Image (tube, rainbow, N blue to C red; front, side, top):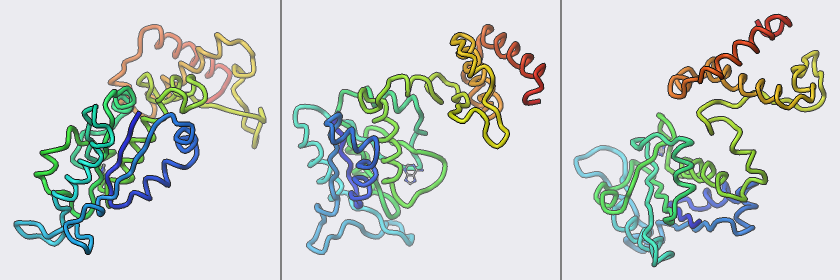
Length: 253
Ligand code: ADE
């Protein structure tokens, strides 16, 4: 997997991706990341990459040509393969786990374009961008943090990046539900007990409990997700049985 990021702050991307799990995966050669400094393609020797907006307004806009030249350099990294160019912007389609899966499976090299200041001249966006992604309905100072979020979410789906495939197939959002609560030692902490079923050693019971907790947490916390991923009859039946058992034992009202 080849990832290239075009940015005025490439160090920010390098530092985030080189930390922890993604850093180890990069060192192990599980993906290639290249960052390109857009300022290296400035229109003058003072490093000019932005200018005032036509039509007035206060902010500065990134100029088309430096961005285009940086993109040509990114494209030259993989001359035999057409790139897929993603612009991070609050106007984009909302990023999701589904999109992370789609990008992780992409056969085309991915190029991420990060804007700064008031944005980027629309003409270069029209020329090079395949899709726009937003990481949420709020505005950041630039696209770098958004690019890191997207890259982190997709990299952990690349085989080998996480040590155990189970780690990403059984967690929040992977099958449209949130993750069930998890516990580690000690079995009692501050008078709070790990649910008995998890100490029972009865694997089938444990899995039924975990599945029903995932359903319950999704219904409680994110009814919007629950509407998109309705529970099957069997899941409802398990959930109700387990809730009844819990209530009998006087746990969680
Ligand atoms: N750039 C600025 N805000 C952003 C957002 N919410 N998502 C993606 N890129 C952005």
